[in-house]
Length: 143
Image 1 (tube, one colour):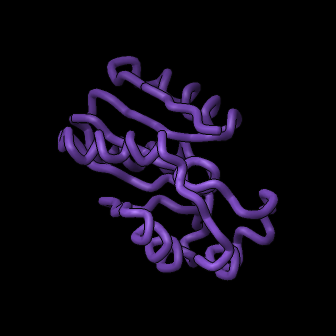
Image 2 (tube, rainbow, N blue to C red):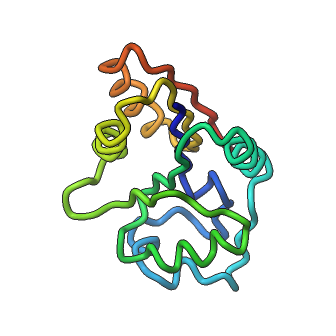
């Protein structure tokens, strides 16, 4: 089974503003009128994952859980629907710790495909996955 993980900001869509952690914690940062533009390469990866139908597809974003509904709304406008949303809550600030929860839930996983724009998250997940030598990791860096 393959697990598909997609980041949101500058992976699914280009941010129409500077990357500001404080601002991105606010609901207004997801207002569709801001002019989000989808990234075609990521959308193709998502379509391929849906077509393969060989495992769950998740959003793995550093947006906070309080923004799940506005995120779902904007994702729907771009044609995305996920099997689960792994966002920041008070416990899980790192993408690696949220990935561990996913892998614990899906012990039959043989491959993880991860779309991400930031090197620090790519490096963190890559390092974390060395603890799972039997699971193939494929990363698509965006932007």
